[in-house]
Length: 275
Image 1 (tube, rainbow, N blue to C red):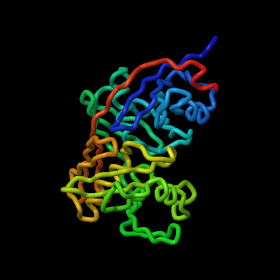
Image 2 (cartoon, rainbow, N blue to C red):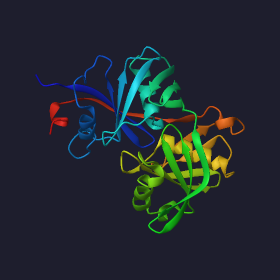
Image 3 (cartoon, helix red, strand yellow):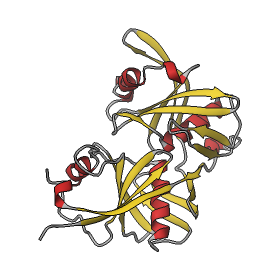
Image 4 (cartoon, rainbow, N blue to C red):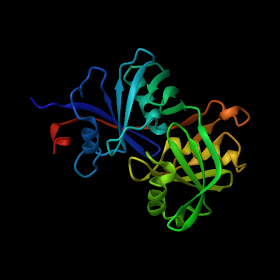
């Protein structure tokens, strides 16, 4: 008989994800990277920025496995984490105050309707005012790992950047070998951080990146441009709020807060992933 896979599609600030309850092993025996790459194809299948598997955990309310659209694993995703937390509450997997396991460690969240406040992993690897050479041109950047690596470039005008060219060049630069980095272009206007992101694994621009928003907010404060809580505007136009304490070593506990939207529930037929 044809295998049919129930899923939900949720959106966090322009990042869309397919969420699958895999606690009973509905995807057992499948080549997950291939499956993910196919179902995330926007022209031949369902389409999404990534896939989130909700699985059983002995340490927390649940465990997740997060896959980028190209089938690669990522340790953490802020917007995906917010969507996973809301999904777990709506499906009675967890209460409104919850915790879940990720490759980057235990993550906690508070869910109030469509709004989710997500505790992020402690940022590390802070490096301010670094530089690298790309195509014979010296480029200034700052760096922070917020569960995944982010190189942040402060620019005067986001409309005039070569996001694909510069983003791809930095993402694959030897300075970040072997796994590469996400690349965020950031502009500060009237106390608000505006951001565009070249996302590793998607290999292009996404409408939002939660870990990128956190990196942009923390680094903007580290440079003295803003003070927390930091308001970050994504490419998709939505606002995220980054909470942290710059007086504490490592910026203390860091939270990402914003809205989510539940696009649909559905069932994947085999034709969605066996083409």
